[in-house]
Image (cartoon, rainbow, N blue to C red; front, side, top):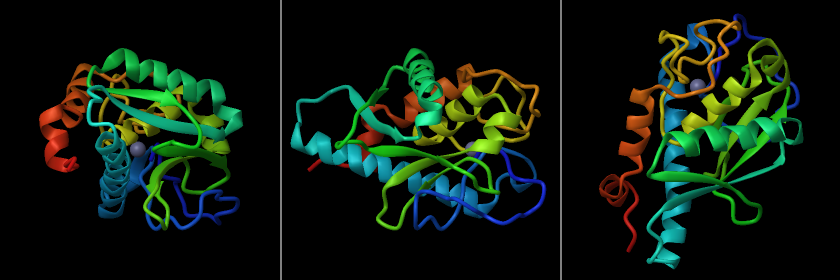
Length: 203
Ligand SMILES: [Zn+2]
């Protein structure tokens, strides 16, 4: 989640169905159990999807996570930009645009909860991008932040602007779109071969 709305409003226009909890971009909701659980569920969903492909093609060494951006056309450039940012920042996992074979999808719409990463009723991971939040905050930062959840990072709303996972915590004026060194190291650790074989064994 990028930021938590200051007050609960009505939710209208959530595109992806079946989500049960949220993991988003800012503030007061920081560190709630529901958010942390959604982050973990999302990562597990992506890892399961990737593990299936690894099982089908055991010779694959580089881990590639494929995304489908076709349901979030407004954010096409920010989504491509996020892949570029993360691919330039980490070594053990790569984001790649795709369609039918995607490990997760981006959606867009209006949701009072803002933007978030979650799993649907079938256990597929998706990132939801909220129109209003992406106007209030720097959109490239929002999308790169949510993509950070795809790669396994939790929210850290109390962190500085130099962190990507502080999301909306530092306020709308923060336009940093790059993960800091600690966040890069954390992603490379999560996606190291040794760790992957523990989390999502290929058999
Ligand atoms: Zn978040």
